[in-house]
Length: 490
Image (tube, rainbow, N blue to C red):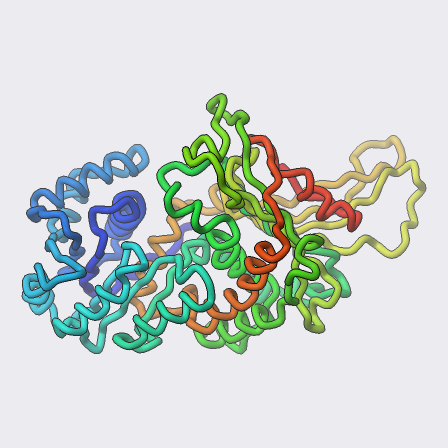
């Protein structure tokens, strides 16, 4: 089975930070894949913009080199590459001065009636400068959108300031706050599982669900992000955005429709219903960790402080949290969250564990009856598993066995698994805000995260060391096992 490809109307995508890491690794390959799929219409243009002085030809070479490095074997098609390069243009601009802005206006004026999207793949500190230059040089049309990457602030106050700065130039409906996790196929399938089937929704509550686990594990360390990461830490970098968005999709009420505002209204209710974590319960409900030297699949690896080359840091590279939602649907159901770097494997998954059966009719010799689980795997190998108890085949009496109904997207569908950015970039063109964060969502997330950060500071809660290549500090195991539960590990 293959999906139907619907071309989008012609557009101009201006990528500020067009020679940066994100453009090289994600944005250019994503747009190329959409062309390869037949989704880009002529005369669509992709315009790189940064301070670096390049010609169109030099930028096209940069793009070709990026595609050679990041495409999979068989995806680099010479004819398609030529067509893609014909769409590429480059303007050297400076966010702090008027350098290059008139040239950008002249280029964009050639397509005044097209959808016009500005992607800010740059440091948040110059979001405001670029927004004001776009306004001052009259680059905003009725079909204009702006896309901003995380981090949206480092706390509630800075998030408000950033939103206010962008909001002075663009209307809220023009602002697309991107979280690439929401573009993953499995994340959207979570909504399909819940709301397109009669099977799960009647059971999706505290009467039938024992607990929920959300794990986002990385096997890598700092890589090239040391300067940013040591000021952020795992709570700001992953929990405030990616993980809380996943939690919202698991926990939200059924929206009235798939309209963007209806979906985001329900996510907002979840964020506002999260029970506070403060200095009085933070040490019981959270764990901070920092990796030490250890080993990965590639061999020995350095510890965080060695990679940082700073000697001293209390920044967390791992965080575990026991969260609860104060509403009728989820009363008493813990949501266990963990995320970290240099863990045992790269893995992102949501595990819904249902309550055990109230009474077993089987003899103890039949074996232990395990609770049913729904496992939604985001990466790698996106898919969905439902565990069930069955009789072990054979004539030797009743023996119970836990098996999984396993749907791998790669095996079930005759189509490549599109990168999340492919979907999100074109959702901007379609003006579909469903998978993007609204301002009040961002602020509600910070309302919950800010007190945790302040409580860590007030209590002096230190990071706990864990060996690289493991699943985090022992305190994270205790966080869940003292409730009689255990982390799901594959």
